[in-house]
Amino acid sequence: MKTMVKIYIPRGYYLIQEETAYELVKGSIILNIKDLINSNRHSDSSRLNGCCGLDGCDGMNRVCLNDHEVGTEYSDCWRYHKVVLNPELVKLI
Image (tube, rainbow, N blue to C red):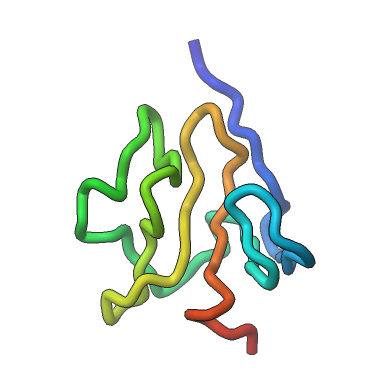
C-alpha cells in the first residue's frame, strides 16, 4: 500500500514562521523539500532516523555544501513534508 505524501507548502513558495511553535522557532524559513538546493544530508547517521524518510526528531539533518548545519528535513510518512531552515544559520537573499 502506497502512502500519500503530505506536502506542507507548494514548490516555489516559502513561509517565515512568525512565532515560536512546536519545533519551529520564530523566523524559521519553511520550504518545499524539492526547492532545497546546494545541501546534503547530515553525515551523523543518528540524525537521519525515520521509516520512509527523515522524521526530523533528532536535530538538524541538512547541511550546506561545506558541511555546516542549516536546517531540518521532515519527510517521513507520518509528517508533513517540508524543510525548516534555522534563521540563525541562514539568511534569505
